[in-house]
Image (cartoon, rainbow over all chains, first blue to last red; front, top):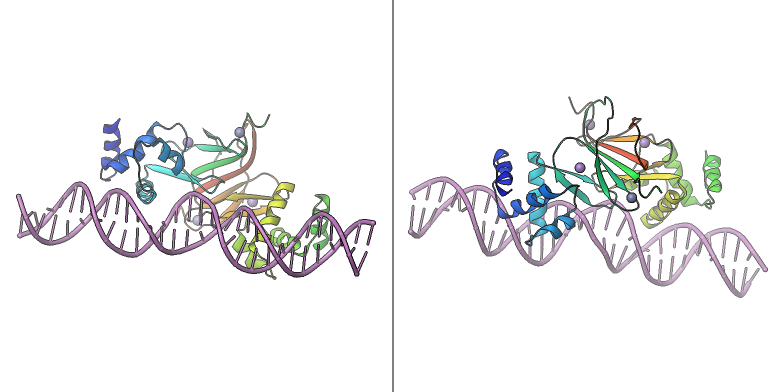
Length: 123
Length: 123
DNA sequence: AAAATTTATGCAACTTAGTCGCAAAGGATC
DNA sequence: GATCCTTTGCGACTAAGTTGCATAAATTTT
Ligand SMILES: [Mn+2]
Ligand SMILES: [Mn+2]
Ligand SMILES: [Zn+2]
Ligand SMILES: [Zn+2]
C-alpha cells in the first residue's frame, strides 16, 4: 500500500513525506469523500491543520485529489478517479458516490453534486 | 410587483414586512442565484445581515427560496422554481442555470450543482 | 562531513460567512 | 393605552480554512 502511495507522489513530482503518506493512506482506504475532521480521526498520528490543508492544496494542483463543498460549510476530499456524482442527503448527511449521465454539456464538468433526500430518508 | 411578492408571503403564511419585501424583490428580478453580498448591493435600503439570514431561513422553510453552496464558502440564493442545475465556472466564477436530465434517481433530488470550466473559459 | 540552501511542518494569530443572545422597535389584540 | 408577540439591529461569537513566521528536516554545495 505504501509503495503505491509513494509511486503516486513520484508520478506527480511530489516529495514523499510522512504527512503526505498519512493523508493519502486514509483517502485510499475510503469509500466516499471525507472532511478534514473525518480524515484526522482516521489518521493514526497527529497533524496540524495547516499542514493538512497545504498538502491537500498540493494534491489538488497535481490532480491527485478532488474536493467539493457540501452544504455544511465543509470541504470533502477524495482521490481523483473517474468523474462521478455525489449525492448528499440533507437529513442523514450521508454522501454517496454515483454515476450519472448528463448527456452532452458544453465546457468541462469536473464535479457533480446532488442534494436532497436519499433513498432511505425519502421514506 | 410588490403585490405579487405580498401574495407570495400571504400564500405561505409569512407576514409581509419591509425587510422581506426588499429581499424578495431582488431575488425576483435576478436571472441567476445571488450571494448575500450581491443581494445587499442590489437592495436600496440597508439591512442587518442577521435580519437577512433569519428571513432567508424562513423563506427556505416555506419553500419560497432555495440555496446552495458554491465552492467559495458562500451561499447562493434564488427563488424556488423548477428543479434545475447550476453550473459554476471555477475560473470566471459565473453561475449559469441549466436544465439537465439525470434519468431516474432514487430518493428526491432537490439541487444539482456542476462545477468545472464554462464554455468560454474552456477555450 | 560541515555549511549553505531549500522545503516541509507546527504554532498561533487571523479571516470571514454565517449564527446567536439580547434589547429596542413595531404591530396586533384587548 | 396596556399587554403581548414578532421583527429588527447591534455586537459578540463560531468555526473552517488561511497566513506569517520560526523551527526542523531534507537536499545541495563546498
Ligand atoms: Mn466519490
Ligand atoms: Mn437557477
Ligand atoms: Zn439520508
Ligand atoms: Zn467561466
